Image (tube, helix red, strand yellow):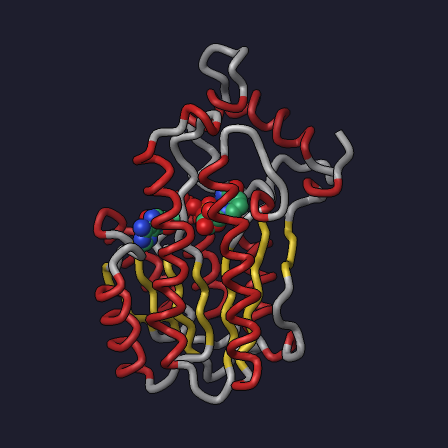
Length: 266
Ligand SMILES: NC(=O)c1ccc[n+]([C@@H]2O[C@H](COP(=O)([O-])OP(=O)(O)OC[C@H]3O[C@@H](n4cnc5c(N)ncnc54)[C@H](O)[C@@H]3O)[C@@H](O)[C@H]2O)c1
């Protein structure tokens, strides 16, 4: 299979979780990868690059916080210098932290989430879009929290709704250049982002030290399909479709991968 043969993709938050999965899935289909993540994730980022190289594709890595536009610009231009082109941008890096009711959120928590999940996405596209030549695809990873609200997530939900506006605007600006821009909206995905004690405790306040088993039951009850969460590869398959020519006339859309979470009548 080579649905992205000859393509180069730039992925943020590439060290673990879905970012790693997007890199591997696109490399399986022939893409070379420019991968960035935080300094504390350097070891995992190197492992992502190894996974890509083990598939016979090329990878560059760089340490770049999406809050740092200069670092992003250096990472993407170094990668493009090495591979000679850029075709796909996947703005994936994000955080889901400091969950609290809207009126109890600290100023710092609000700003950190907006800085990474919204301004970081804008930095990512601003750094990389000028390198797209001859069309291309921008995929922004939002969330079902970018389509509906949820308790304790004002900062996260606001940021994930906001990137939809950014994507729709970019789709208008870039359409005439043959560049498509879409958002992907995962429901719960079984990564470290949600499978951790802080999230379990926030979601299950009536249970002392809730276990993963407790959380599985809660997450499963939110979905139409009988699973607690989707796997990273399920989201990567949507990213791959939007990155590839199979979606050549798809732009300005929101693709939901959520096991039915947004449609469930509770
Ligand atoms: N896991 C879920 O249930 C879920 C659901 C919907 C949407 N999402 C979104 O999917 C994306 C990936 O989530 P994940 O579950 O793989 O999370 P994860 O925590 O497993 O991975 C996130 C990656 O982003 C990196 N990152 C964090 N802050 C960064 C920054 N400032 N600059 C650069 N890199 C940074 C982390 O180091 C990490 O490697 C995020 O945007 C998240 O909001 C996740």
